[in-house]
Image 1 (cartoon, rainbow, N blue to C red):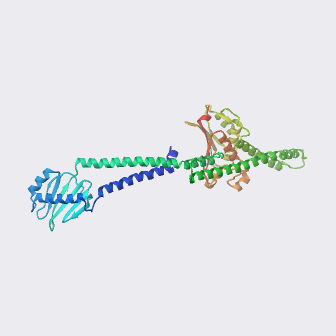
Image 2 (cartoon, rainbow, N blue to C red):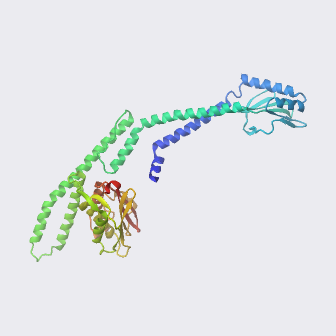
Image 3 (spheres, one colour):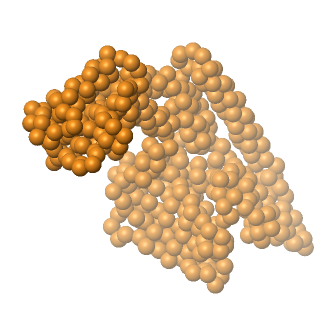
Amino acid sequence: MARVCRKVRQSLFTKLALVLIFGVLAINGVTMHLYSTQKREHDTTLNQGLLQYARHLATLVGSPPDRSKAEALARQRPMRITYTGKTPWVVGETEKRFPARFLAPRFSQDGIEILNLHENYRLRVSLAPNEFLTFDLFSTKAERSALWQFGIYSLISTCLIMLVVYLILRFLLRPIEWLTEGAGYIGDGELDTRVQTRGSGQLRELCEAFNQMAFRLESLVMGQRDLLLGVSHELRTPLTRLKLRLEMLTGEVDTSALKHDVRQMEAMITSLLETAKMHHGIDALSTRQTDMAQLVAEVTEGYRDQPPGISSDIPERPVMAMIDLDRMTMALGSLLDNAIKYSTPDSAPVEISLREEDDGFSIVVKDYGIGIPKESMKHLFAPFYRVDESRTRTTGGYGLGLYLCQAIIKSHGARMEVESSLGVGTVFRIVFPRQNIS
């Protein structure tokens, strides 16, 4: 769930949607502002009408202002009349809220100032220096309803327009999704991936360039694999002859070191051949129903006597899966071999566990050894890659174990996850999806 949320949050289309939502709010804000401020400070018919109305109201109140006349006037229409002078007074609607702080100047002429906010008006008539009559006109229910309807209809129509714009942009920018998916597949090793090249323009050219790049990359990698396969196959013949000649040497010659080197070469060539065959599909997996709990237990048994030892957590009941027994044994053995190899004799035992999960099962191999540097993690499964050259000379290996292990795991439709910290240890987790379980 967290991965999906992060993907949605980082999506270009999510950011595009947020930009359009911001555009909707901005457009409606500007529209409402223009609606409320239109025709201000202009000598319009409405402003002249408001001036005449202010003069008429002041005349009805009288001069000097008569409070009783003001009270009679306030009863005819919801308003508040305020007199500011020697003896100030206020009559009329005093309970209703009036947006006095938000009023904006609308028009002024001949000592009359008009302020308003939407349909709320303040008409201030100057009678003499420091003497004013102020008429606060409250908006009616019908006026407030019309304003809300205008805002709601404007927001809905703008949202619908922006939704159509978003769908059109998403349709036009589909090649970006294709390129993202294609790059992910190629990153996972599916080098025959190609993206669609519909439409026209720069995005089509980008898709075509991506396909050309993928084709060249596939050709390059396939050429390297062909070379490895061919060289490995050809090396087996002279290597076999070398083994025969070593056997024919007299006992006076110490050939133990030479035999050790030959065995290492043979193991490396076998790994190369196995990997190349799987990538080329020469030898298909020979799968059969296998009890993974029993397999893990049998593979683990061969490493119990090696320091720092092995601790296993395997369920008693069978966990059946369709696997290639020989190749899966090779993969598990490679992981345990690495865990033992890069642990110190005094570190905690290597842990291996088989865990059943809702969506399948997983095999976890955890060691408390020297760990893997962060910068080496992305190259960990590359052929012939060794994290530490000096360490390899003492522990052996040519950087093919994890490369072959990952190839075997992927060929079974599973995936391998790695976590590691220097000086703390490393965790390899093989995740088998539900379809592998029988």
